[in-house]
Length: 141
Image 1 (cartoon, rainbow, N blue to C red):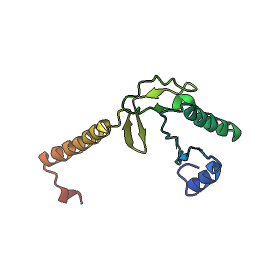
Image 2 (image 1 turned 60 degrees about the horizontal axis):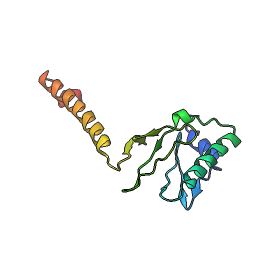
Image 3 (image 1 turned 30 degrees about the vertical axis):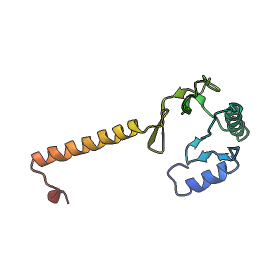
Image 4 (image 1 turned 90 degrees about the horizontal axis):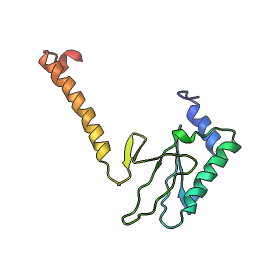
């Protein structure tokens, strides 16, 4: 199914019955991932309820959810000092990549910017090296 023309359509039909919404905050569904984004500041039960709902959905549709491949990113509000325990052995992390964008627990994007700058510098190094060897852009066209 992955990589086929009909793959995205079949996936949408398959995952169409997944409704993750608590307090008007929807989950996000992608072709091979599901991301649950929910603000939690007073009612910690909503976080638990949402994860439970997702795990029940996967079991009802005879799918396997692998908690070891899941990640939880907690971005606390300023002054929030409560310890949030992991659910269902889902590891908590300090950053997570979603569709190529790196999100950090502190709300900053410095890791994302650093990774993009490193990639750009590598490309510039290759271009400079090729120019030193006398290969111009006109020769490669």
